[in-house]
Length: 194
Image 1 (cartoon, rainbow, N blue to C red):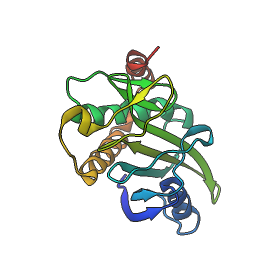
Image 2 (image 1 turned 45 degrees about the vertical axis):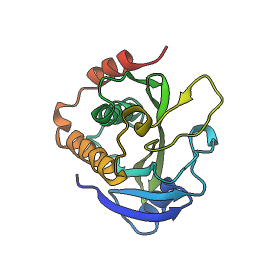
Image 3 (image 1 turned 135 degrees about the vertical axis):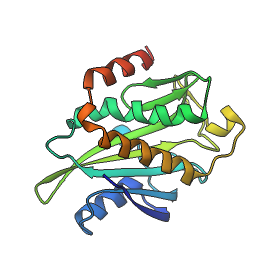
């Protein structure tokens, strides 16, 4: 599987663009990312604060018969994305808060929004990914937020991180025959915040 990249200056949300590319442009596999989102969203209809300089992206692909089921991706996605974040935040405590947050030192650094759509009788998975690279919102809940720059003092190019994410997913699909749900689940359980 090869992800075609679609880059935009400003969008409502990268998941909206992915949906449009699937339904109207008949694209099947891709990665959308943008400098700005005007209506970024998180789970349960929450607003995702989309500050410029952070990673705002979505991957999309058809859920083929030999692929893991939709619900298994709620384990696969945070495991893959935490692996990407660990590349940069070495020696930091990377964990998950179910169902869709990746944390560094118990502070939110990444949000994931997984959506399933059907187009032309085919099911597609859209994975919205927001990673705080240079800034983070002040969210008043049990978890504080952080960003890669704050944790590492390194300012990373968005494209570099996006390429690492794409590479990680392409690698996952390349090695699909060795995929084992229980080993992903075990890793996820070890990283889950109580």
